[in-house]
Image 1 (spheres, helix red, strand yellow):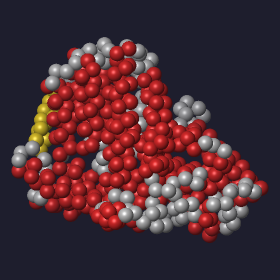
Image 2: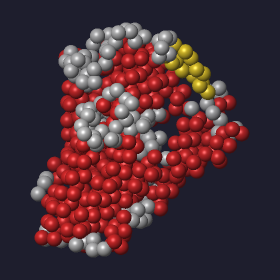
Image 3: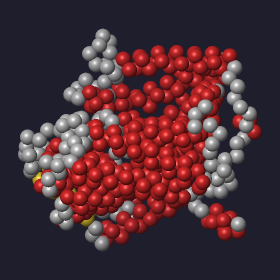
Length: 513
């Protein structure tokens, strides 16, 4: 007992850990800069398909320019940190749903007759396939999953950890081509044309292997959660106000009907606005793009730029109309109170986000991650592996690279120029090579605090931790380790099995040339 209390006292709060990591980054940048740590990055000219080189060096944060960057850009980086604005805006919508009683009624009814395993599987499955929403999926799924477990009278921390595992272990899995996939495909095509100038890439190339992977990963995460994690998390003490069973009154049913009708009208209107070619439709698309996925998710797309607000308004409409029907919102003052409900008490989360944004921006500035990734890509081309060893090599190195650069696009820009030709010369298709890379990311995406939305995971754990025991950054990572190891092993087995059997990975997609 004394040892446990001593460990709790010695546990650093995530804020202090991030401050420590920032300090280590500053010192490390100075040391590596003096040691001449650098790398040559190869790039392919899009028009000539010829290689060009660029020397990447470590930027010393203890130099004049480095210190200037620290003091001049820290505030700007915090303000521009996407998770900050996304979290605050989404919490406004969630606050209306929660304060009005919509979430308690809807989620209690949803989980009342449903088995625990089923609820967990649905949360995990939705988290895995939520990549089509981009990074916004972290801001939506993690808080919602916590509330689903809370109103299901289970520890909200289980919902947070399981949902984050689904989001990260499923970060490279998708039924549909996302905006990230679209950019990766463009880079893959450029790398493939160095070997085959007539190469084409079908967007349906991944369907079969993705379908199997998503299903198996969802099942695996559910089993890990129910058979392992539940026993590791402290028992949840249900507040006295939530002990008695929910009895649905006529007012609450009326509120659900009101919110259901209003929500359906809103969703149908929104869907109509992303369908091109119909009268007065397609207003949320970027019509300068060729492919629909790019029209939907390009940087100039109204859909992409306004998706956070669109989702928040959907949540506000559900909560508001439920409150009107159930009489839990009687006037404009009560409605305004609901808008600030979830935002109350997030001061510590804002401080956490500030230190996370600082650590991430400092590490990116140093170029340490970029140089490590360049050397990892060079390792793949220099070892002359073929067949299964080459698959394993790219898979593992993709996982290691993700720790230092979580961004798929940034990593693939570094890797593709040399890795795609290497794999094509070894007999692998560019499509299968990209899948190996994406599956490898899933191995460590949930283990790196350099991933911008990792801070949302930390903030929600801190918010819903009802015990006196602190949960540090490294303990939060340890919760994800079983998911990373088992899901990583499963994805690697799928890749090797698919390669050995010779099944098509999708429509017009194969593993071997």
